[in-house]
Length: 120
Image 1 (cartoon, rainbow, N blue to C red):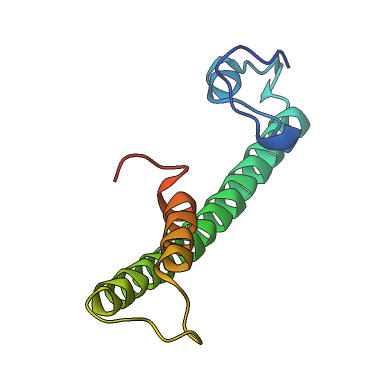
Image 2: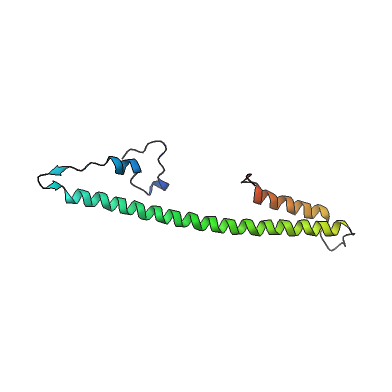
């Protein structure tokens, strides 16, 4: 099989591209297609579809986990911004973090939340 530009084969775990399936031709003998050849090809198709399903399930789980992490980090940012807003109107006791420390934490959290995805 020749891998053409644009084909995505996840870590070489898939044997077939859609084009391979489309262009597959079976040799015909006196009684029609060779059953062993057809069976072997269909086994590869089934394996690829199974692998695609596994990949999709993993990516869906990753998306769910990352979305939950993103929500938690955004909540932490809102909490810290609220903390800064309430402490800006009064003097901060020495045992609490300074405004500078809180701003640094917010900045770090914003980099994590917004740093890799600038669409928001």
